[in-house]
Image (cartoon, rainbow, N blue to C red; front, top):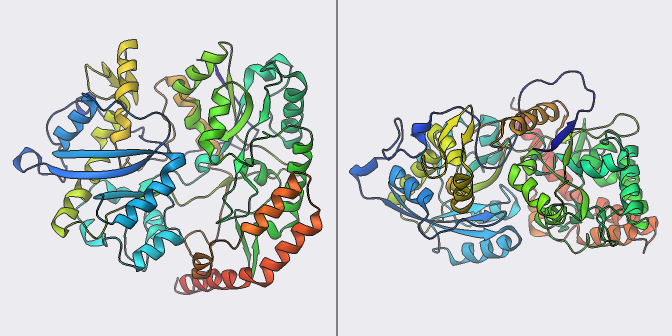
Length: 523
């Protein structure tokens, strides 16, 4: 597989790191395709009537083929459930989730993809979801989730949602992925500094390797302006290379928001300059999510975008090669700024919370929690990667499925991993390749960025003021966007920052700092 990697010189990398569906703990092949309830499972197996569970979850990519899906049949049999999953494309998920929450009784299980955000906090206070705390006592797999992850997801000390484990570093915007074959064509190194990246994007623009003027040097997407003004998302490695904080910085009692720093101004100036030179996707202001940016990269027109190691999985590479058989992907482990600034976000350690609507009968809640605990079992690590033995794979060795071409095709149709609603806690959960060389590359990259984590001191706190005023960043975001597009002056941006600082920002900052002090004064 033509995937290469350029490591930025660091001290030495050690272990730990992050997220997609699966894990890399060994497991034996009897797990994939066994028909008995697993040893140690909290489920009661064939001795009781299957639990009927209707769930809704977010979908990235194509959905599984639901007709005669042998993976689903196997999981239902082993888990003693009748599972009905609605897979909603990521771009439509927010709207569909709002409808489902409003209906109240449409689903037994909902993935709250925003985690413990203001929306979730308010819904909990309104009584929309069950308190799952008493139902978690019997779990054997979910209970392995790190305590810091549980604490960050709790509301008033109670668990109203079960975190889907992810790594603590980087998340979905950990690394820049770039066309290695384009770099080689023009004798360019894999970028490890901002200057090298900017130069590579400029060469892509000038030389037009996609042909016909179709080349997009760097594809990013618009910010929703709710939790941050943006103006763009898909740029975190660049922000850290400028030395921008992870949302908030705390120095004693002095609280600073990212866009209040001079580093953020320098970052916006880089965006403005890059935009003026055609280095940034002209569709960026109207692109809504990472999936749309990724699609441009995989379609062969974009030279770079921000994702993580799960994006170099072989199915993505094969899709890219359909457009250009010579295509290769390099991953930028760490991007450094002029003074050596670099970073990867220290995150909550989960993506989305599984919540059970309060309309679900209490006697069914334990069945739902038990099923999620079952999907996070060691045997389902194997199932998520290898599916059913004899159908999706021949064996499962050292965390990698042994598959014929026909079995690979069947796996891609049935997508066993999509039915593992709750993955096992694993620092290498983003390391999802079935090929040993790519898997090793993924793990090494995750190890590397685990050494450069940038913390957000207010990560687990929420501002009620911000919750009640969700548009507090909207105007600032619009003004920043105009500035980057060359349609406004810096004075306009500074005016909005000052207005926020003296208005909503003062209240938001106070609420977050009060929560921080209250928690840390008891330690």
